[in-house]
Length: 308
Image (cartoon, rainbow, N blue to C red; front, side, top):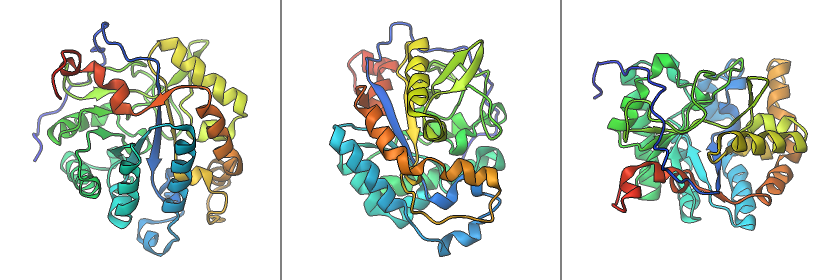
């Protein structure tokens, strides 16, 4: 069980200035079904999920093929819900040389749960993922980047469960998520050498942070603009940039939710037929890697040559 004390909000503990992260950028995938997205949470209810068509396997294999073609290793933040129903998919991700990390159990946002519920949610998901791959899972990303100052204690849950890093903060504000006051560089949210937070990449223009990490923004924007924001966002901080996407973004044949609000439909479906080609084009421009390989130099045990 978790302790009852509240973790204090601390945004002032950056990683050591001596840390050398290298030149690679991080490619990440949030592995979830097309019907589990936040855009449809009021249109497709959880009790309906079992009767909906599962497409996550074919979608994820499409991404695996793209990555293999370019020789890229990536990090896949997977739902426990997916691991329970498709353990061979999770195993295939691992066996292809990619990092399997945790995205929670069933895409519930952190602020909808209390501390003990969140602990149980992440614990269950981690166990299912580790059962599927036979290895430890040490990375986490909150569903919909929903870690907030009000749920800062989530980092203590992560530490207690054996996680080494999180990539759960987006240092900008949208209508669904974001924490504009968050640092843009990796930092220690609950104390040095505990859980490392690696924020998503943003591009600052006229003092305003703009989304630059991929996902729907990269899919909806013209390729040249999405590429520019991603590349310049990384250059502004000097830290490795993080790109993310979802398997459903490369599947224009998925079911159409015609009763969802028009804005939700626009955000979800627009650009899917071009996303795979855009991603493949971006992959050719940079050197890419897994989160754990890129950001492990933040830990002194890595820098000192000791095993984690």
